[in-house]
Image (cartoon, rainbow, N blue to C red; front, side):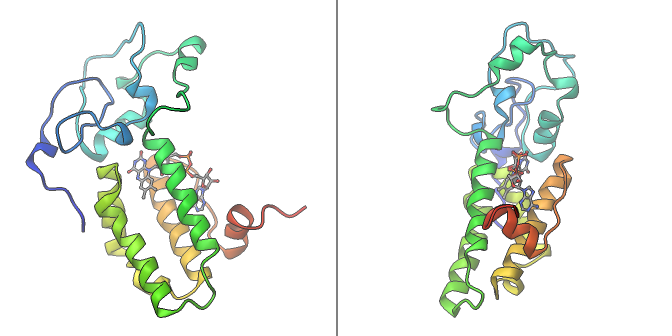
Length: 195
Ligand code: FAD
């Protein structure tokens, strides 16, 4: 659900290696890691690929590799985003996961039908509205394989389901997977670690 089938999303317009284009054909800041967005001095690439759209481009960008610069510690400093910069794919992702996991952590043990319906509406809105379209589309694909309807019946079930969805993205990005039990989730998102 929520896929953007706009033809312009398929266009391939070279702008800068690692930069993901949005449906309007312009660079999409919330789809691109800042380190690929920020112009660097002495940028070197092997010339194999330019910017493109979709998850493949994001993966190439995030994995670094052939499309990235050769960094020195000084250049690495330049990747630090100023606080008032619009969010890149990573900051938007961290903020969104923080919001979602925290909301799940404080979701009722026994939600009312209205609370369930609102939670479902919130989750289902992500594929359609998330500013990083390729991220939202992939999340929508994952949700269609793992429907949220079955999991909004309690805080524990919702926390587990959300953790699994996050792990799905973690796997895609080569990041560490998390244990999704309520103890792990509460330690991270509600109570803090045990003393
Ligand atoms: P994040 O993955 O943002 O996690 C934040 C914190 O959550 C971590 O520090 C950790 O403490 C905790 N955590 C980690 N895993 C779990 C888990 N399974 N359960 C509970 N807590 C956990 N980026 C892309 O490049 N491509 C995508 O397609 C993409 N899709 C996304 C889809 C959605 C719906 C969202 C919200 C984000 C997506 N992102 C995507 C962003 C990506 O998931 C990360 O947010 C981003 O790469 C920053 O990662 P991070 O390592 O700082 O930690």
